[in-house]
Amino acid sequence: MKYDLAYSERARVWEDYLERVNRTIASLAEMNQICEDTIKSMWLINSQIFDTVKASWGMKKLPNYQVFVSVYYKRNIVYLQSSHALACIGFIDPSSNLNRTVFETILRSYLFVVEHEEADRYFQVIDTAEEESYKIKKGVTCLRGKMYSPKTGEQLRNLYKELCISAHPNIRGAALDYPEYLPHRIEDNLRIIQSLMYGNIQIMAECFIDFLSPLARKLIKASMERIASTLKAVPNFEPDKDSYSERIRLKRGNFLKSL
Image (cartoon, rainbow, N blue to C red):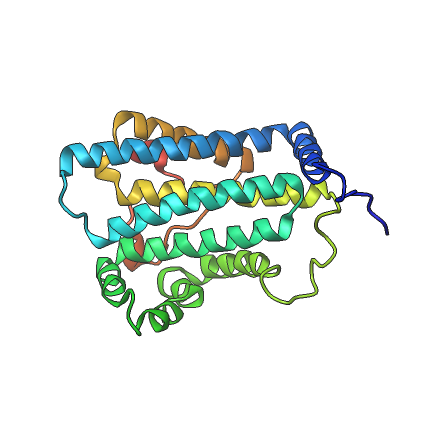
């Protein structure tokens, strides 16, 4: 099959990208708009929390778990924003690779929220010979078994397995990417992006729940409710083993009542 992309022509590559983005916006208008609006909301939530922390906490260093979660949250916004842009063009595999990193980061964030001492331990090994071994020991498989019930752990395993397809030398999904334009794969990826946006907002709200201004609470509830309504399901990333679930305030879609 031959694709007439005419890369030698000036600016033709970017014109091709733009055509595909416009096609996605037109055919998946609601899904795309929710992604765009949630990206904006995530940045606003970040600034609201940061301003409240400065006003009430001052210039003191935050506990390590809050430092890590806040840094992860901002990085996840950038990754999700990039993933969304790639998905709209039709670059599904690169988009999935970014989604995979966000997924891993959300689980790591929950570990630090339910076990503050883990954040302290990780802080101690950063830039040491032990850092890599810590990351390996506390990988996704470990976190699933540690924090989640068998049923939820299996659901997360299946999602992670799909996100890993393009990251590994796997034949599945080969030739199902750009320069093909596959609307069903783009839509599926936008749904995953929305789920991860929900998880990213929820863990940030969980970690800084005592620093949420009225505006931050309003933005968080509106964003999470819109995503859940569109997906017709509540994304489930929070730990649900009894010993950890009791330490979580935002869980099982209770954000409308808890915030």
